[in-house]
Image 1 (tube, rainbow, N blue to C red):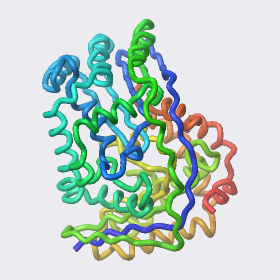
Image 2 (cartoon, helix red, strand yellow):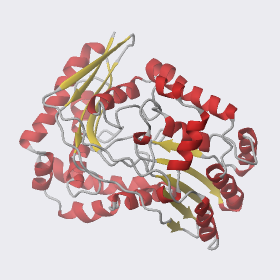
Image 3 (cartoon, rainbow, N blue to C red):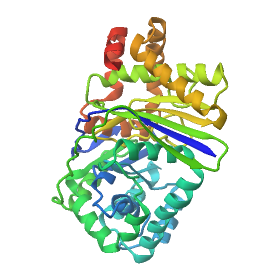
Image 4 (tube, one colour):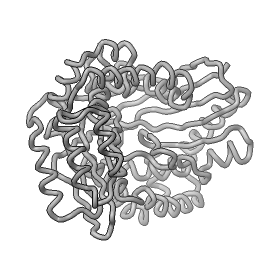
Length: 421
């Protein structure tokens, strides 16, 4: 049996992240590619009770459904010669529709993408397909063979029980089965509105393209439902543990608690240094990876995060535009052979407690600060990711890369130690 352990500390949560409606434009005339991002400040936190998954299903109906003039199959046929795709990504507080295309095909792609958002078909067959895909994801993929994300969902369910963040973005099986096509149509009208949209364009687009493309979205409803306010996270004292037993050859351990800071707050940046010291995603510089994998051979990967992290494909980097109004810090230990699971959990908690009690070592602080100022530059290595981070800067009111460039040179070990405590 696998023992998946999820550990939680007590917490209080605050912190806004509010979207604006102005366009984000990053022209790069020499770039032959153009990236477009349509960011909506709507997410799973907006799901009505009993219909968990409605936001994600609506977004998928937009990104993976037909339009007024084309069926979904016809849209795929039209995208193929453009060498382009429309991607839909979402989380608790946002959904974004993205695509990158050669500038020679930009106008044709823009027509297809804007039609997806402005004139969705909402066909019964698209609805049935997307709803069944979501149910299959929960019942087969997540429960069956994606233990890492199952552990993360178990952690989120424990951290945010009774809170709008407390269910998977994809929804619940019962919630999805309760949703009707009329629910999707109504949710689209009420939540995918002009006031919740940020249009982003980056790359080598013609000068006359951006104003006309942005103006298309004035056709969206200007009103709609107000943004759902978030309550504080459920108050707890001490440590809670959830164990999910499965027939498997390894354990995935997720440890975490909500934190009262986002990128909008000054303390976020020294905490980012602390998390990098413990271990960046899929890198070998962190103390957890060195002590647990390299020295002891306990497991494959041990990483730390100061905000919600969803990996971008096979990279080591997070997806941009999955902003949250409330955040949590976490450690991931995965996969861990069952015989090593208890020791791995104890060591991870020990390393975290040691960091809190003793602070970051002087030499490690200097090395981590140097590493992070260079590593962060890789987060925006193509036009689409640069655009994503620029939109995130609008949402949070702080550009994480600019803040790091400004803050890291003068940040001290004492700043990190204070923020950790």
